[in-house]
Length: 299
Image (cartoon, rainbow, N blue to C red; front, side):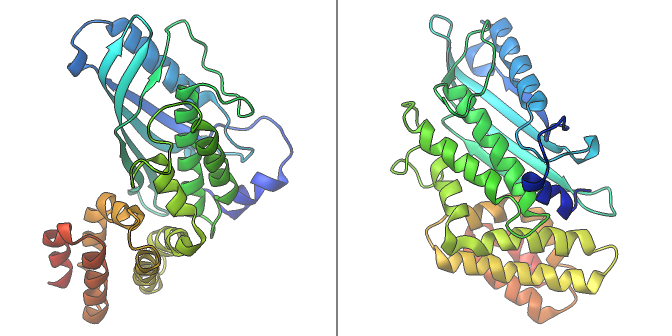
């Protein structure tokens, strides 16, 4: 399990050979484009998966067992062999192991409806942060840094700040590429909006929540159940603070979406009825569409 020294190493360690951070699986769905150009799509899958897993994105040393498990499930909706243009939808999921158990908790889950780019099977995937002129590289680098930064946030308070700031820099540079998803004026749940909200100073409570929920809550359930349960309840108060600080943000709601089953499982077994009702009120205020699930917490 990663510890605080691994986070501090982002600043302290000199450049040297390090293990890569991601253990990514890339899945390609070509049902919408039929059986044509399957070879080009498979080449794309192989190259992207190898690139994500072989690239060292930070200077933090990761052991093999500490690498972040994630899945890039890419549905190709349109492909042009003439210019190598792909129009895709990405379903991204990453998980985090829970200390002292075999359980893995969902770390981040999102759907990107504008995962569009150009790719030639002869292309060599190379990422140059100083000259970001390729949409595919921008997409992969953005999500790599986002997942790593959010993972670090769960092991130390605001632990992923420098990595997430790199993701912000990628967003800024990618706005010049002419693709959807990077602009501040498009959608409230695009790449720009979600990261911008997550990193906004007024929303710092959501990042503190990620640490308290995972490190002081889930990771401690086996060793100190009562203390861990108190931390989990307190993490929900932080989630509510984030909602109140920026009521139009989709970030708190997104958290409840991919954590729904876990939240119900944890808090429906919580012994303190008053705290259960408080958690219910928070989750209902954030995501009333899932009230059928939240009702289980009150029982």
